[in-house]
Structure formats: structure tokens, C-alpha cells
Image 1 (tube, rainbow, N blue to C red):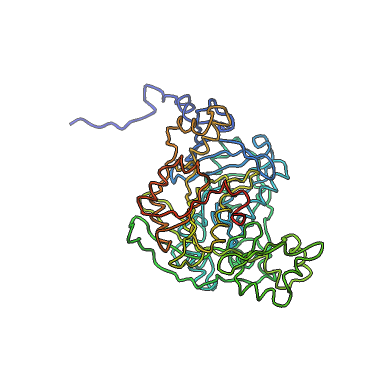
Image 2: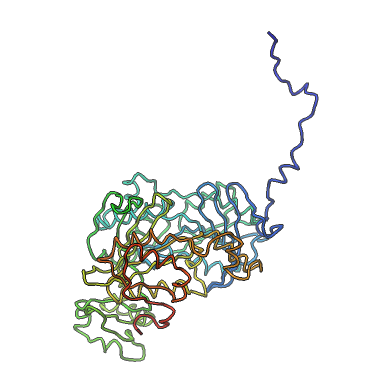
Length: 531
């Protein structure tokens, strides 16, 4: 038997090969996403892949959105840059976690949208900076986890805090991961130190652990409201630097009806959907039209008539209108009423500033697509009602304070139609790009910006994507679960959109949904009250 001789590098005849050139071909240099060598190059660093970039015009100035995706869990990260970022010494920065309920659905039960828009305003005022928008809903637990937290908190009448709810569900208080930030800094050539816009010390430590220099912090704190006071109080107790929850005179407000917590269960008629949570969302009113029941209207204007609040050079109320089922829209002059509140905080009229539209949020987990589905319902439909229904496709970009708000306006118009009638439902489709995903949507925008495509249709042909990839069948199945019969009023953008999407009408027919009335938003420029 031959003897095995251990390998000895000292006596090896050939030197170790030099793989430097090979590795250089594999690695993308710092700043490679700012100036790709070609329009088709997609730089990568770590687990973070660059997908596209495009301009965004906001109310606070011009930003450029750089879109990235994590290759492990597939979530998107958007770096919204303003001014010079590659050669800056210091940048104002925010790490912002997504919040669909406040940023898209106008929810008043947190401060996320205020912080988002506040960060845009600060960065624009400073002249340069970057806002990292991370798809980490509910502190990283996803919308199902977040919604079950909301359900448990409301079922306890706010006696259980958000962090106690997380602990009861076996969750840590924060599941977010910020490792993509250092990858993105490499790809964008950012070497500056950060002044971080945050109230959360944990974010500072997360950046420093990645080797990112933090030059300081600035808070983003806003006056609590009756529906987010409990949430902000729990954040303060959890370590956030917040002073106002303990100092405010605002009182907590509870949902209009009791909430019952339940264990997740499959829908009998479509077992792919796991019904995971249900809770109430206080929604910011549209056009400052405050919704009151007949009893609320009479109680508020019992001692002083509404006409008195409409009088004078600075009226508090601009008008009112009786709507279906003896309810009222009262249009307030928000700026005048806010000023009035400072001198007259006990006058009951000031409560109109924080009177929301109440929607119930129903959250489903789809085991087929691994996506969350959100259905919002309003009112308690009677068997004879014909509820107003909307399937609304969301765009991530429309969560930001854009100058052009067409998509956001359509959501608001849809909400107004539902509230005006009194009962209805809205299903939110998260997938951008007509179902192709946000990556396709952002690439479409980049191709238009760089002249690679003449139109979205042209871009989608180059992407190899159909005009509409959305799953309308699953949407209709969920909507049927929340309407009293098979007759509805369907809200669409325009007659043309219905023609372009025959799959939509086909899905309604397959599921025997009778559309009693089509409501076309583009045909009603002044909203539902004008029709």
C-alpha cells in the first residue's frame, strides 16, 4: 500500500494562480449603479441587485428613485436621492419602513405617513440627501403580522400595547434588517456620513454595525391624534425618543364597534386564502367632507346651528349635504378650524378635525402566491343594498408626496363613492405594473426616461410581459365574501380601461356577479356628489 504524503505548499512547484482579474470581472465597482456601463447592466453587491432608476417629481422638489431588490427574500428597496450624493461629505438620511395603511389607505392610527413626508421636506430643504424606503411592513413582520397586532390591540380596547401584542404572538419587537443599506451605498458610491432623521436609536446602531458613519440625528415627531396616541405611547415605552405622547392633551379614541380576535382559518369556498385578521381603520376624510350620522349631526349642532359656524370672514364650516340613509357630509375649513381650536379647545366643533371615515380591514394570506390580500369594507349592508365595489391597483410610487397624484385621486374618489352610498368594499392589489410587479413597473419608467421605449405598451413588449397580468378571479372570490348578494356597483377608471381589460369583465361573469351600475371615475371629474 502506498503511503499518503501530506500536501506542503512550501515545496509546491507552481505558484498559486492570481484570480484578481477574474474576480474584478465578477464584482461591480463602487458607484456602478449611478453610471452603469450600459443601459442593460444590472449591478449587484452582496444580496442587493440594482433594477432601475427614474426621476420623481415631488411636492418638495426633484428626486431620483434607484430601485433595488434583495435576492434572498425578494423585497424591494427604493433609494430616493436628492441633490449630489456621491461626492457629499454629509447626507441627511432616513431609513423608512413601508406602511400601506397610512401611506396608501389614508389611515390615522400611526405616524408613518407624517414621518415619510416630513423626511422628504427636510432632505429637500437641506439640498441633498437620500431616503431609503424599505418594504418591511409592521417592523418587518409583514402585513399579516401587523394586522393581527392591530386586531389584538383593538380587541383589548387598547389595554394591550403593540409590543405586548407582538410578544403574545411569539414575535420580537422588531424584525427589520438594514443590511441592504451598505450594499446600496456601495452601488451608489455613497461615502458620506449620515445625519439620520429618526426617533429610533436602534436604527443608528444598525447603521454603525455596517460601518456607516453617523454624524448625528434629528427627530421627526408630530402631535399625536386620538387614533395613534396609544401606538405612539407604546413606541415611547419601547425606546423611541418621543416626548409628545406623555405631554399631549389629546385623548384616545376607540373603534366604533367591538373587535373580536380570532385564529387564522381557510375560506371554505377558496381554501387557498387564509383569513388572518380583521380590525378597524380610521381613514382621513376626503376633501375635508366629514361624515356624520343623523344623531351625530343633531347632537353637534343642537346648541348652535350649523349656519352660525358657516358665518363670518373665517367660517369653520363651508357647507353641508344630506346623503343616503339620513347621513350628512359637513365640509370643514380645516385651516380656520385648526386656528379656532387653539383658542376654543373645548368647543365640540373642533372634534370634526379628527372624525374619520371608518373602514374595516380584512387581511388574507394566499398560499398559492405567498401574497397578502387586503379588503376594506364600509357600512353594514342590508340584503337590498347594492354595494359600491372597487378593485384598486396600488403603485408604490404613489405612496410618496408626488406632484401628480392621479392614482391617489382615484382611490380617494372610490372611497368617496363608497362612503356616499353607505356600503361597499375595496380590494387592494399590491402588484405594480398591471400585475407584473414593481420591478417591471420601475423598468418601464426607466425605459421611458432613457428613450428605450416609446410607450408602456412598447416597454412591456420588450420586457416580455402581457398587458395585464393581474389575477382578477382571486379578487372576485374575496370580494364575494364581503357583499350581501351578487349585485354590485363597480367602480372603474374609464370605459376604455374596461375595454382594454376583458379579463376583468370575464371574471365577473364567471363568478356570476351582476354589475347593476358602472361608475367611471374619469367621467366624474368633480366626484360622486356631482352625479
